[in-house]
Length: 333
Image (cartoon, rainbow, N blue to C red; front, side, top):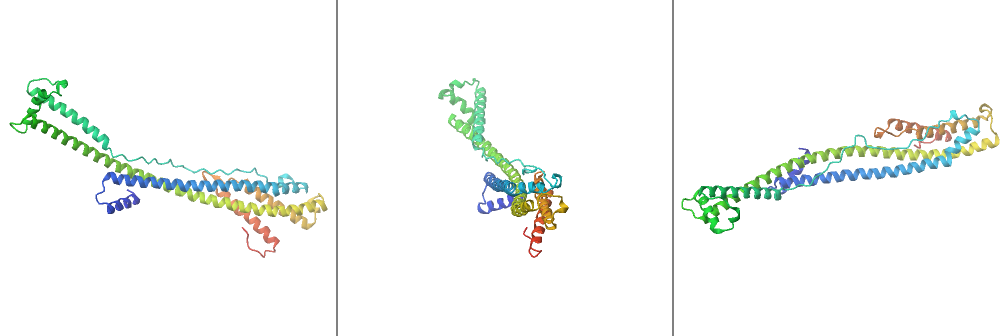
């Protein structure tokens, strides 16, 4: 039994000392249902958040390419760079799937078994009544005719021997009362035993289901933690892309000026400041292409490679901005 189940049972006992196994099973099952609902709600919330992040990431990538990156690569090629000098890895779509996905626990409703127990007891009671009447009929030397059981004159002689088993001079009425009383006692015992057994089984099943629900919830909590990591990574990636869009747009203006004034020539013939700008643009283009071309998911988790590449990409941005401001500025990423 888990700590949560034990705590739940203790609470039930303190609030209702006479709480039976069936009621405890109902309480545990209800708690298991709440655990499942809570786990599913948390994961659904995370998935909605990830969907929104992925939508924003897609829009950010498209904006980067259309407003800056595509032009940066074209300008560098126009200024004499070879395509092999630029990293142009194919963009990798991000897809997150939970690793070792746990099958959802089905929390079944608890049935008291009272109706089926009553039905079983009634059937056994009817059978015992027929057997008793058959034995009584045989003891007085007549055959049991079910069609005549509604005839009081036929039934009374059958009931009297039953009464005499307990009272020597018992009448047929006494025999009938004894038969009815014994049959009802037997039926009641069968009913109580079966309901009790069903309640015990219900409690065992409820405890097993509760443990499964707790395990499922634990696995979903791990999944949520991983989703939170993915969410943080996606948002940091989007933020980094926005920096690259601004920096590349600025570099593109410089490259257009170089192409207009100095025109295309061998790298060593460009002005030394132009060479620096070309190298800066190349570093920025290669860094962002490397980021966009690195798979983010691996075996259902955020890949370590994606995390490492993001760190290196942010470092490129920080170094570039520090160069602009003569290192008199804190890291922006």
